[in-house]
Image (tube, rainbow, N blue to C red; front, side, top):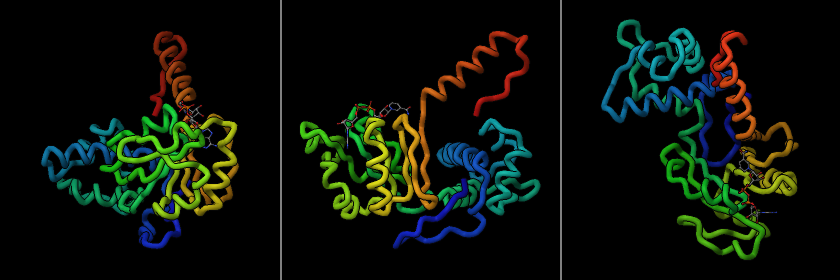
Length: 235
Ligand SMILES: NC(=O)c1ccc[n+]([C@@H]2O[C@H](COP(=O)([O-])OP(=O)(O)OC[C@H]3O[C@@H](n4cnc5c(N)ncnc54)[C@H](O)[C@@H]3O)[C@@H](O)[C@H]2O)c1
């Protein structure tokens, strides 16, 4: 995966340094960002690569390699400017863009996601939530009202949605995914337990908690049976 800039009006392309970052580094950048946010909250202005690596649970050569993709090498003996690095990582991850997210499916998962207040501070505003069930359409979820999925295209346009989350049953996920793509949405996160097909220009990510639990179970089992060999850290 590469960090790409969606072609959307009103969004400014990020610099070349933000492109072609390996997926594992992208994942770690989000961890550094969290650590930097904590440092900012504590009023800390400078951090050494060792301290930041420690806070993020990686070693400092790996941290320096990851940050080199941003063109950020820090200053020997002085370390990194916390605020500046925070901004650089945010730009590279596209978090300074205006992400307007629609959730499809106002069931258990969709409602829980829509009600979570932590997305806004990370640059993601939930602007719409949809459902097909007439008993659910029109009900309130936080500050939003559930829209009818029949009105999907109209509401996406009105709310200037540029990212979508699928929290619907697997049986309808592909059809809704196709509608999103046809409506110009090119960043989609799916919770539906099904393989979805999208054109190459669309960024599709899948969240599967059961896969994560299986990986966790595997590592827990190895930890209990030392004879099985060293455990690599699940990240
Ligand atoms: N990946 C994970 O870790 C994970 C975890 C939990 C749930 N899930 C998946 O997420 C999805 C939602 O789970 P849930 O527990 O919220 O289910 P749910 O049944 O509570 O909610 C699904 C909602 O989708 C709506 N819906 C059905 N067809 C629709 C359509 N065509 N358009 C719009 N809305 C439609 C339903 O009316 C319902 O409100 C399921 O596919 C589930 O398997 C994934």
